[in-house]
Image (cartoon, rainbow, N blue to C red):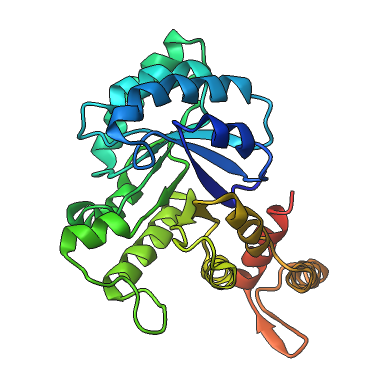
Length: 289
Protein backbone atom coordinates (compact mmCIF):
# COMPACT_ATOMS: atom_id res chain seq x y z
CA UNK A 1 0.00 0.00 0.00
CA UNK A 2 1.40 3.43 -0.88
CA UNK A 3 1.99 6.05 1.80
CA UNK A 4 1.43 9.22 -0.21
CA UNK A 5 -0.93 11.33 1.89
CA UNK A 6 -0.28 11.78 5.63
CA UNK A 7 -3.32 13.57 7.08
CA UNK A 8 -3.30 15.20 10.53
CA UNK A 9 -6.53 15.08 12.54
CA UNK A 10 -6.88 16.72 15.98
CA UNK A 11 -6.91 14.08 18.68
CA UNK A 12 -9.43 15.99 20.78
CA UNK A 13 -12.09 16.28 18.05
CA UNK A 14 -14.51 13.37 18.21
CA UNK A 15 -16.35 14.78 15.20
CA UNK A 16 -13.26 14.96 12.97
CA UNK A 17 -12.01 11.57 14.14
CA UNK A 18 -15.38 10.12 13.22
CA UNK A 19 -15.12 11.34 9.63
CA UNK A 20 -11.45 10.87 8.82
CA UNK A 21 -11.64 7.19 7.91
CA UNK A 22 -13.72 8.11 4.84
CA UNK A 23 -11.31 10.66 3.35
CA UNK A 24 -9.00 8.24 1.52
CA UNK A 25 -5.74 9.21 3.24
CA UNK A 26 -3.02 6.58 3.07
CA UNK A 27 -1.99 7.54 6.60
CA UNK A 28 -4.07 9.21 9.31
CA UNK A 29 -2.03 10.93 12.03
CA UNK A 30 -4.01 11.50 15.22
CA UNK A 31 -2.37 14.64 16.54
CA UNK A 32 -1.79 15.04 20.26
CA UNK A 33 0.70 17.88 19.82
CA UNK A 34 0.14 21.20 18.03
CA UNK A 35 -3.52 20.61 17.14
CA UNK A 36 -4.51 20.07 20.77
CA UNK A 37 -4.55 22.86 23.35
CA UNK A 38 -2.68 22.16 26.61
CA UNK A 39 -5.88 21.94 28.63
CA UNK A 40 -7.37 19.40 26.20
CA UNK A 41 -4.44 16.96 26.00
CA UNK A 42 -5.59 14.71 28.85
CA UNK A 43 -9.02 14.26 27.24
CA UNK A 44 -7.51 13.71 23.79
CA UNK A 45 -5.49 10.63 24.77
CA UNK A 46 -8.39 8.22 25.45
CA UNK A 47 -10.17 9.52 22.35
CA UNK A 48 -7.08 8.76 20.27
CA UNK A 49 -6.81 5.25 21.69
CA UNK A 50 -10.50 4.59 21.11
CA UNK A 51 -10.15 5.67 17.47
CA UNK A 52 -7.07 3.50 16.98
CA UNK A 53 -8.75 0.45 18.47
CA UNK A 54 -11.94 0.98 16.49
CA UNK A 55 -10.20 1.38 13.14
CA UNK A 56 -7.79 -1.55 13.04
CA UNK A 57 -9.44 -2.74 9.82
CA UNK A 58 -9.21 0.69 8.18
CA UNK A 59 -7.62 1.04 4.77
CA UNK A 60 -5.59 3.92 6.21
CA UNK A 61 -2.52 3.33 8.32
CA UNK A 62 -3.07 4.66 11.85
CA UNK A 63 -0.37 6.89 13.32
CA UNK A 64 -0.14 9.23 16.32
CA UNK A 65 1.88 12.40 16.74
CA UNK A 66 2.93 12.52 20.37
CA UNK A 67 4.23 15.59 22.14
CA UNK A 68 7.90 16.46 21.91
CA UNK A 69 10.36 14.35 23.84
CA UNK A 70 11.70 17.39 25.69
CA UNK A 71 8.29 17.85 27.38
CA UNK A 72 6.71 15.96 30.27
CA UNK A 73 3.78 14.87 28.07
CA UNK A 74 5.08 12.26 25.66
CA UNK A 75 5.25 9.31 28.07
CA UNK A 76 1.60 9.84 28.99
CA UNK A 77 0.78 10.03 25.27
CA UNK A 78 2.53 6.73 24.56
CA UNK A 79 1.04 4.96 27.57
CA UNK A 80 -2.44 6.03 26.47
CA UNK A 81 -2.24 5.15 22.76
CA UNK A 82 -0.13 1.98 22.63
CA UNK A 83 -3.06 -0.25 23.72
CA UNK A 84 -4.70 0.83 20.43
CA UNK A 85 -1.78 -0.67 18.44
CA UNK A 86 -0.82 2.34 16.31
CA UNK A 87 1.08 1.58 13.12
CA UNK A 88 3.52 4.32 13.93
CA UNK A 89 4.50 7.30 16.05
CA UNK A 90 5.38 10.70 14.59
CA UNK A 91 8.04 12.41 16.68
CA UNK A 92 7.93 16.24 16.65
CA UNK A 93 11.01 18.35 17.25
CA UNK A 94 13.24 15.29 17.00
CA UNK A 95 16.78 16.19 18.05
CA UNK A 96 18.60 13.28 16.42
CA UNK A 97 19.10 9.51 16.22
CA UNK A 98 20.10 9.07 19.89
CA UNK A 99 16.75 10.43 20.99
CA UNK A 100 14.90 8.08 18.65
CA UNK A 101 16.87 5.08 19.89
CA UNK A 102 15.83 5.86 23.47
CA UNK A 103 12.21 6.26 22.36
CA UNK A 104 12.36 2.97 20.46
CA UNK A 105 13.44 1.15 23.63
CA UNK A 106 10.43 2.47 25.53
CA UNK A 107 8.08 1.58 22.69
CA UNK A 108 9.51 -1.95 22.71
CA UNK A 109 8.57 -2.34 26.37
CA UNK A 110 5.05 -1.11 25.67
CA UNK A 111 4.67 -3.47 22.71
CA UNK A 112 5.57 -6.38 24.97
CA UNK A 113 3.20 -5.20 27.70
CA UNK A 114 0.25 -4.95 25.29
CA UNK A 115 0.91 -8.10 23.31
CA UNK A 116 1.98 -6.31 20.13
CA UNK A 117 4.50 -7.71 17.67
CA UNK A 118 8.02 -6.59 18.48
CA UNK A 119 9.11 -3.79 16.17
CA UNK A 120 5.64 -3.30 14.71
CA UNK A 121 5.39 0.37 15.76
CA UNK A 122 7.34 2.50 13.28
CA UNK A 123 8.78 6.00 13.72
CA UNK A 124 8.60 9.14 11.58
CA UNK A 125 10.60 12.04 13.04
CA UNK A 126 10.14 15.69 12.14
CA UNK A 127 13.83 16.43 11.81
CA UNK A 128 14.01 20.15 11.09
CA UNK A 129 12.20 22.05 13.82
CA UNK A 130 15.26 23.47 15.60
CA UNK A 131 18.51 24.78 14.08
CA UNK A 132 20.55 22.07 15.85
CA UNK A 133 18.27 19.34 14.51
CA UNK A 134 18.32 20.79 11.01
CA UNK A 135 22.11 20.82 10.75
CA UNK A 136 22.25 17.21 11.99
CA UNK A 137 19.82 15.64 9.52
CA UNK A 138 22.57 13.69 7.77
CA UNK A 139 23.41 11.86 11.03
CA UNK A 140 20.36 9.64 10.56
CA UNK A 141 22.12 7.97 7.63
CA UNK A 142 24.75 6.41 9.93
CA UNK A 143 22.39 5.41 12.74
CA UNK A 144 20.87 2.02 13.54
CA UNK A 145 17.12 2.70 13.63
CA UNK A 146 15.16 -0.43 12.63
CA UNK A 147 11.84 1.26 13.40
CA UNK A 148 12.51 4.21 11.11
CA UNK A 149 9.79 4.46 8.44
CA UNK A 150 10.81 7.79 6.96
CA UNK A 151 11.91 11.37 7.54
CA UNK A 152 9.85 14.50 7.26
CA UNK A 153 10.25 18.18 7.96
CA UNK A 154 8.38 21.38 8.76
CA UNK A 155 9.05 25.05 8.27
CA UNK A 156 6.99 26.79 10.93
CA UNK A 157 8.97 25.97 14.08
CA UNK A 158 12.29 26.44 12.33
CA UNK A 159 11.32 29.84 10.95
CA UNK A 160 10.33 30.97 14.44
CA UNK A 161 13.55 29.59 15.91
CA UNK A 162 15.78 31.50 13.49
CA UNK A 163 13.65 34.64 13.39
CA UNK A 164 12.86 34.35 9.68
CA UNK A 165 10.19 36.76 8.49
CA UNK A 166 9.61 34.72 5.34
CA UNK A 167 9.85 31.13 4.23
CA UNK A 168 9.14 31.58 0.54
CA UNK A 169 10.30 34.18 -1.97
CA UNK A 170 8.14 36.40 -4.17
CA UNK A 171 7.71 33.53 -6.65
CA UNK A 172 6.41 31.21 -3.93
CA UNK A 173 9.58 29.08 -3.77
CA UNK A 174 11.30 28.09 -0.55
CA UNK A 175 14.10 30.41 0.46
CA UNK A 176 17.63 29.04 0.78
CA UNK A 177 17.50 27.75 4.37
CA UNK A 178 14.28 25.81 3.86
CA UNK A 179 15.36 24.54 0.46
CA UNK A 180 18.56 23.22 2.07
CA UNK A 181 16.61 21.46 4.83
CA UNK A 182 14.21 19.92 2.32
CA UNK A 183 17.09 18.62 0.21
CA UNK A 184 18.80 17.11 3.27
CA UNK A 185 15.61 15.29 4.23
CA UNK A 186 15.23 13.91 0.72
CA UNK A 187 18.84 12.75 0.40
CA UNK A 188 19.12 11.33 3.92
CA UNK A 189 15.87 9.40 3.65
CA UNK A 190 17.03 7.80 0.41
CA UNK A 191 20.41 7.06 2.02
CA UNK A 192 18.53 5.26 4.82
CA UNK A 193 16.20 3.49 2.34
CA UNK A 194 13.17 4.98 4.10
CA UNK A 195 10.35 7.23 2.91
CA UNK A 196 11.09 10.93 2.28
CA UNK A 197 7.88 12.77 3.19
CA UNK A 198 7.55 16.41 2.14
CA UNK A 199 6.10 19.08 4.39
CA UNK A 200 2.54 20.38 4.20
CA UNK A 201 1.02 23.06 1.99
CA UNK A 202 -0.41 25.41 4.60
CA UNK A 203 -3.19 27.02 2.53
CA UNK A 204 -5.70 24.18 2.25
CA UNK A 205 -7.97 26.32 0.05
CA UNK A 206 -5.23 26.70 -2.57
CA UNK A 207 -5.90 23.56 -4.58
CA UNK A 208 -3.98 24.79 -7.62
CA UNK A 209 -0.92 25.63 -5.54
CA UNK A 210 -1.08 22.30 -3.73
CA UNK A 211 -1.30 20.44 -7.02
CA UNK A 212 1.79 22.26 -8.27
CA UNK A 213 3.94 21.70 -5.18
CA UNK A 214 2.81 18.08 -4.78
CA UNK A 215 3.68 17.23 -8.38
CA UNK A 216 7.03 18.98 -8.02
CA UNK A 217 7.64 17.03 -4.82
CA UNK A 218 6.93 13.73 -6.56
CA UNK A 219 9.19 14.73 -9.46
CA UNK A 220 11.98 15.61 -7.00
CA UNK A 221 11.90 12.13 -5.47
CA UNK A 222 9.64 12.44 -2.42
CA UNK A 223 7.32 9.53 -1.65
CA UNK A 224 4.50 11.48 -0.03
CA UNK A 225 3.40 14.67 1.64
CA UNK A 226 1.81 15.88 4.87
CA UNK A 227 -1.77 17.19 4.76
CA UNK A 228 -3.82 19.31 7.15
CA UNK A 229 -7.28 19.04 5.56
CA UNK A 230 -9.21 16.13 4.00
CA UNK A 231 -9.65 18.19 0.79
CA UNK A 232 -5.89 17.96 0.24
CA UNK A 233 -5.85 14.15 0.24
CA UNK A 234 -7.10 13.40 -3.30
CA UNK A 235 -4.80 16.05 -4.77
CA UNK A 236 -1.76 14.57 -3.03
CA UNK A 237 -2.72 10.99 -3.85
CA UNK A 238 -3.05 11.84 -7.54
CA UNK A 239 0.20 13.82 -7.64
CA UNK A 240 2.23 10.97 -6.15
CA UNK A 241 1.08 8.38 -8.66
CA UNK A 242 2.88 8.03 -12.00
CA UNK A 243 0.88 8.93 -15.08
CA UNK A 244 0.08 6.55 -17.90
CA UNK A 245 2.84 7.94 -20.13
CA UNK A 246 5.40 7.60 -17.34
CA UNK A 247 4.35 3.99 -16.70
CA UNK A 248 4.44 3.13 -20.41
CA UNK A 249 7.92 4.61 -20.77
CA UNK A 250 9.18 2.63 -17.77
CA UNK A 251 7.85 -0.56 -19.30
CA UNK A 252 9.53 0.21 -22.61
CA UNK A 253 12.84 0.76 -20.83
CA UNK A 254 12.61 -2.51 -18.91
CA UNK A 255 11.58 -4.40 -22.05
CA UNK A 256 14.43 -2.88 -24.06
CA UNK A 257 17.06 -4.00 -21.56
CA UNK A 258 15.41 -7.43 -21.25
CA UNK A 259 15.70 -7.81 -25.01
CA UNK A 260 19.44 -7.05 -24.84
CA UNK A 261 20.73 -9.03 -21.84
CA UNK A 262 24.15 -8.04 -20.65
CA UNK A 263 23.93 -4.61 -22.29
CA UNK A 264 25.03 -1.73 -20.08
CA UNK A 265 23.64 1.05 -22.28
CA UNK A 266 21.36 1.25 -25.27
CA UNK A 267 19.43 3.64 -27.45
CA UNK A 268 15.66 3.89 -27.18
CA UNK A 269 13.59 6.32 -29.25
CA UNK A 270 16.59 8.57 -29.80
CA UNK A 271 17.68 8.58 -26.14
CA UNK A 272 20.77 6.96 -24.68
CA UNK A 273 19.86 4.91 -21.61
CA UNK A 274 22.08 3.20 -19.06
CA UNK A 275 21.72 1.30 -15.79
CA UNK A 276 20.39 4.21 -13.64
CA UNK A 277 17.52 4.60 -16.12
CA UNK A 278 16.76 0.90 -15.81
CA UNK A 279 16.87 0.99 -12.03
CA UNK A 280 14.52 3.99 -11.92
CA UNK A 281 12.09 2.29 -14.31
CA UNK A 282 12.06 -0.88 -12.22
CA UNK A 283 11.42 1.08 -9.02
CA UNK A 284 8.51 2.92 -10.61
CA UNK A 285 6.89 -0.31 -11.81
CA UNK A 286 7.53 -2.06 -8.49
CA UNK A 287 5.69 0.75 -6.71
CA UNK A 288 2.53 -0.02 -8.67
CA UNK A 289 2.12 -3.27 -6.72
